[in-house]
Length: 277
Image 1 (cartoon, rainbow, N blue to C red):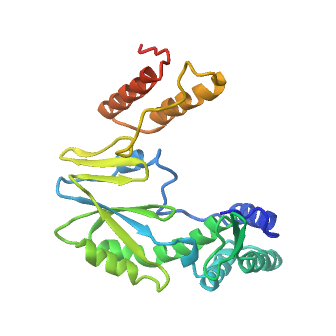
Image 2: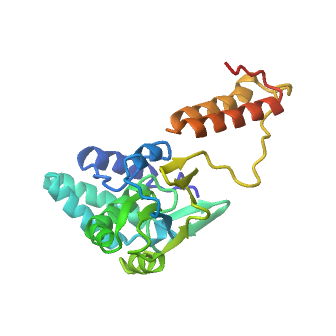
Image 3: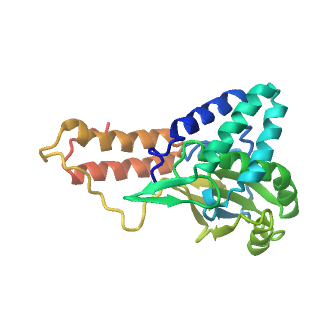
């Protein structure tokens, strides 16, 4: 999805930057990224019978109610004591961006009738305004009703830890799908005590939660071989990525060593010189 050729592209970037400066969102239920997730989970009290599940918001950007979000945005600006003149300016920008709701896909111009523009720099912020309002209005009640131990969200992916004797996943889905007429959720439950969330398999152990780095079943260890006639910078870019990812995730010692061995195997199979000490 490409929004670069839309006239309001630069205004959309400016709008996002200004709102983040003047009225930053609280992000009470958000996780920053997959790297921070293991650290966040380490503070979650776990019992062996707790269950893991993830929820996904279907078609997030087209599910955002723009009219409601504008009203929520007005309240946010007022709560942050933004001057009336600045409020009016930001609201005019909001309307301009919301009305230019089209994007290019290949050689076609696509008009989007609902929600926020796909690929617009401001779409993530506008979606967050709407979703965080929903969360602050309802999540506390839902977590108490279904005994949800932990609730966190990354964009449109939600992770929940709950007590299965006090909550049924279908009942949870039904309640989430009743939060707003435009929002629809789907669920994935753990399989063999493991749930893949973002790019982390989260394993439920008697001693707590353990995380590793996720790879698809069809994963191959093919990277640019060391002997190929490519730039050395290109060849080592993948190597740096693999090691940086390993060091940026807060993995336990066993999972860290397993991932390190996988990296060494990848490098060995592609004829890279390896230092193991």
